[in-house]
Image: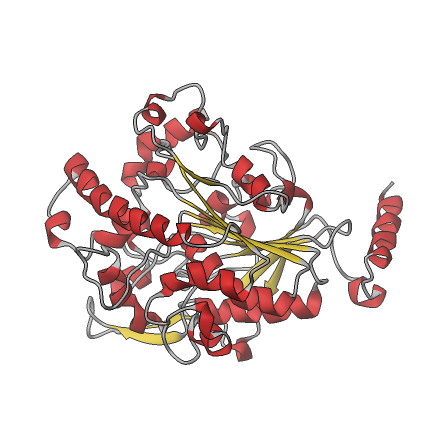
Amino acid sequence: MRHAFHRTALLATFALGLPALAQAAVEYYKWTPVTLPVESGASCGNGTPARVFVNRTPLTTKTLVYFEGGGACWNQNGCLGKGKLTEVASNPNGVPENYLSQVNLAAFGMSTPLITRTALLGKIYTQSWNIVYVPYCTGDVHTGASTQIYSDADPANPTTYQHRGYKNAKALSAWMAANMPRPEHLLVSGSSAGGVGSTANYGILRLALKPLKSALAADSGPLFPAPQNGTAAQYPSLPLQNKVRSLWGVDRPDGVASELIAMYPEAGDVSDLSTLNSGLTKVFPKDRFGYMTFQEDGIFSAFSYSSFYPEIAALSGKAKDQAINVLWRKDLANWKAQLDKNPATTGYYFPTWRPFLKAHTLVMMDFTGTGIEEANIKSVATFYENLIDESKPVMRVQEQDQVGDHKRVLSVNPLQWLVALFEGFFL
């Protein structure tokens, strides 16, 4: 039986037009670590090697690239991982080769149905695709291209930190172009910090891999509008974006937006990364773009505002959550208005709330609790299915019911409620 499978795999390899010798050592249906070359500039924040993990199938060239979520940093303790998960950089000790067998952020990332081979947590088309999982270890939402020295917590022992998220994505793009077949269909996705990373790095992946069809699905990592001629009152995310732009090297000549915009000026404005939301549709007019977030996301919103608004930092409990959500909804309205001006190849999906992780991310753990019932949509899986159905425009749906989601009991996985009981201790 085993020999028969390998014969089938080899036949499929030839059928797909891949060089047999180059593929002879490929292992299918198994997570294989790939260490990105140091000479490319790829690195984790602590200077250890950056790695990705590849799970291949011989039956298709369709490929999902999924960026892991987690926390970011712009100070010493945050970059050293000292604090709650929502206050610090993820994987401060780097990414070992056995990363996917450990109990860490990957355990949460692996729980998304998008990158499993079974439909246990929800059925979706990517389960039969080639899958590339991109861990997050650079503290820069996968967008950095700089080296910083932080000494604010301990001046006597400064910390040198490598914000190399974009460099890692660039190295990944080159590796995939050299070692994987040209995708019949490419889907770039990610959650939280990975949602930002999937949007910011979509261009470099798309250009390197040259897929026949391509789409972006950014979950709960919005690039909110923050123009330099605006104010924080108009664009609440502006203080955050101003803080990290230079620290992470976003606007350097070799930065995540600068290189794409140098090639394609219509891609956007390097001083406001949110312009990629519209610019990508101009550079890749045949591609499809989908953006998702909960209207009451309590984690990405806290990350966006708590450190930049003293009046909010002074609050606690529900009062703080409510004050944060006021700013979040203002940013969300600006974002929706921006996306509404895009062609029909751009869509969005904004349900109200679910209990898991303070309503942060729609595809982690499972898809339950992500429906928009007033539109007869059972879950976000429908949005993903629609995203690659080129016979239809991408869906644009924002839930109007602000109460119903909070009354859900049976329609949500009980594990979500269990996590919600304890999440305050680590979030």
